[in-house]
Length: 450
Image: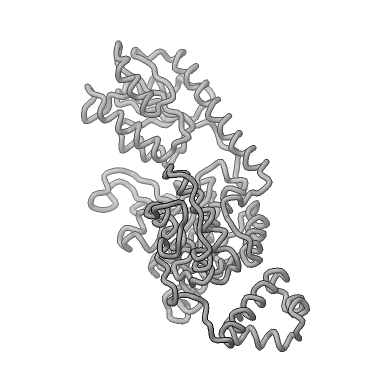
C-alpha cells in the first residue's frame, strides 16, 4: 500500500553559494538541488516535489530568462499540479509577470531572503496539499466512480464491477482486449479509484519504443553508462514510485527485457543501466495487450513465469461488436461532446445513422467510433448526422437479410446478454435462456464464445 509522503521541495539555482544557503533554509522539507534544466527535470521525475523554487537565470544563459522560462514550461507540462515559485533579478517585474502568465504560482525578486522565501514556500505547499486533498475527496464522493466509461451492456457492466472491486488493492492486473477497446481508460480507472490516486500514473507503450531504447526508458541509467548518457536519469519504473505503472502492449516487450521486468516484479527493486545500486520502488503494476499471450508462450516469444506474474488478475474487455447497445450510447455521447467543442449548435443522428451504427461491426472498436463521429460532427452541413456523414455505406456492413443469419445473430446476442446478467455462470445463464446446460455449451461452441 502507498506510504505517507514527506514534503518535497526542489530548488533550481546555478549559484553554488545560494545552493548551500537554500538547502538548509526550509524546516520540515526534504530539499533537492538542481543547477540547470536537465538536472531539474531529472530531479522532478525522481523527487516529485510539491513546490519548485526556480531561478529564471539558468545556464547556458544565466544573464537572460529564456532557459528559465523554458524550464518552467517543461516542469508544468510534466507535473501541472506542482507549484512553481520563480526567482527573478532585482527590478525585473516584467519577467516575473511573464512567468506568472506562463503558469508560475508566485515570484520573488532577488536578493533571496530566506525568511520570506520560507513563507512563500509554506503557502504554496499548503495550496498544493489542499488541491490534492480536494481531488481525493471529489473522487471519494462520486456516485459513479467509473463515470468516464460509458456502457449499458451486461458485458461491460461486469467489467466495471470488477474494476471497482479490485481497484483498492495492489494486485497486478492484466487487461486483455483488441486495439481501441479502452484498455488505457480502464487502467486509469484502476489508478484513480486506488489509494495511490494522489500519485502519478506513468504509462509506457512497449510497442512504440525501439527495443534498444526501451531498457533505459524503463530502468533509467547512470551517467556515462553509454554514449550520450551525460547525466543520471531515473526510468519510468522509478518515476512511478508510490503510484501506478501502466505497461501497455506488454506482449511486444522483447524477451531480453522480460527477464529484467520479472526480476523487478519479484524483488521490487530496480538497477539502472551502468549502476550497481538496488533502488526499492513501491509501485502498482497494470499491464495490457491485444496479443494472445498463451499463444506467444507456446511460440517461445513470451515468458511463462512473467505471464503468471502480470496476470494475478485478468480482465477481458470485449470488442464493441459484442457490447449489446453500447455503440449507439457511445456515439450519442461523443456527438454531444464534439458539438459542444465545435460550437456549431446541437446535432443529432437520424434514424438511418442509428441503424448503421447498430449494424456496423466496428473492427476499430471505440476508437474508430469516436473518430467517425468526430469527422461527421465537423463535416455535416445541418443539425442531422446521416449514415453518409459517418461514411457507413448501406449494404456493406448492414445486418444480413438471410433468415438463418438473422436468427443466429439474435441468438448470439441473447447468449451474451444472459452470460452478462448471470456473471458468466453457465447454470444461471441456461435458466435465463430456457435451455439446458448441454444446449448452452453447444451454442457457446457454435458462436465461438468459449
